Length: 245
View 1: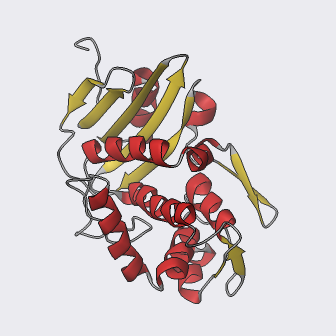
View 2 (view 1 turned 30 degrees about the vertical axis):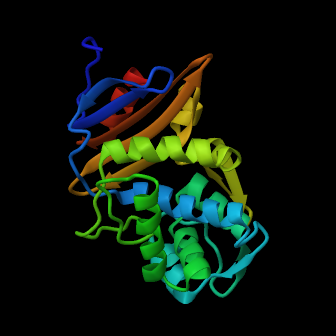
């Protein structure tokens, strides 16, 4: 472990096979979650599906708010769901997990809880129940908010929880692409194509927190999870992630 190096200000590489941290630096220091919030949003939906509260076929409307704030007009990552259309939960989940779609995140929140605000309460309750000790989320998209914070330690715990609690849903994180409205969108966690063994999970960026990554990988009997944040550039993040995995 002493031979491992990283340029990330915050980094933790967990060996799932032994339970050891192979490298750790400021893994308990808080930062803005950005896209990592979508992992909690997805987990809330996974739980609702598992308990039978909803099904993959349940239809949710795309409100004007979801379209304007998370769709094409917002110029953010989107699945291009049409305003006032109805989309099955299964497709919204694929948009959220594979494409990091903000319109999908908002539509799922509004459909399941009535509003983003109420859904966020559910996110924070869920985070507390599964042991995320130092995290608080302000919305399902990860849009900047001073109240939203998380840590790498919590993200490592969340990754392990999702894999264990929802093994069938976890496979979505490794889906290479997603076709919707005749638009084929490649998985934004591009390391699943660039690094052998990588099967999820999510990349993130925040103006203050910098570039981040939560990556899970398995080869043979060995499995590791990498959480890192604070990179000053995409190039630094990509080079470091590849070296550590």
